[in-house]
Image (cartoon, rainbow, N blue to C red; front, side, top):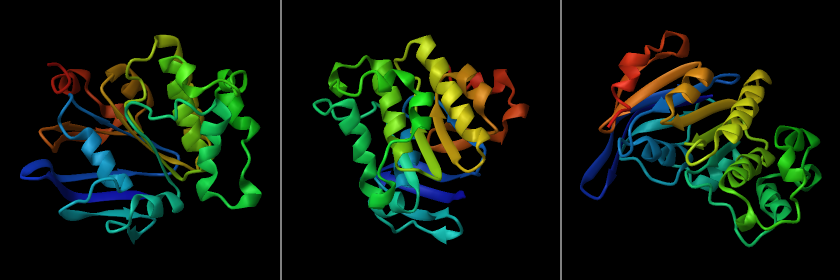
Length: 231
């Protein structure tokens, strides 16, 4: 569903990505790992259209979408859960979820019961403002808001950051369930090795804007990967 081919990305004169290639397939999870500042978030911003690339291609469903704007990629079924969640703090949980209706035709603008089954705490808090939720609850809301758009490609930037272990487990179960449905490709950036190892069908490790290790999740060697995660 997604192929990123040898993309370079610059912020002014500083090069953030150097010939990075990754892919994501329906029914599978691709995990991108690495320390802070190695280019993981820049990669996701390039994929979802928040930052232009200077060379290389982003391909979705066989179509070159490198020149498309972020909203045009969203219309093609791409959903993004950014680092830091970026929910609307003054809107209620329900209103935050309903912002995901924007890309859907009117007949499909409803929140499915499946979403509340994945994140039951949200159903109990529909009238509460997003800013009043805990960090873990806000993360669940951010993921749920992305799922409201009915994506075919879900892009998540460090969903475990600053989250208590019990909610990490809830998010892991939700992501595993989405994979089992077989329709959605999932691209996940993570620093938490155990979380990534549990979920990854394929993985890529980044260092200084480049992919330095890649392969099947089942073949991931902990010592090799942790060498690029420790400070």
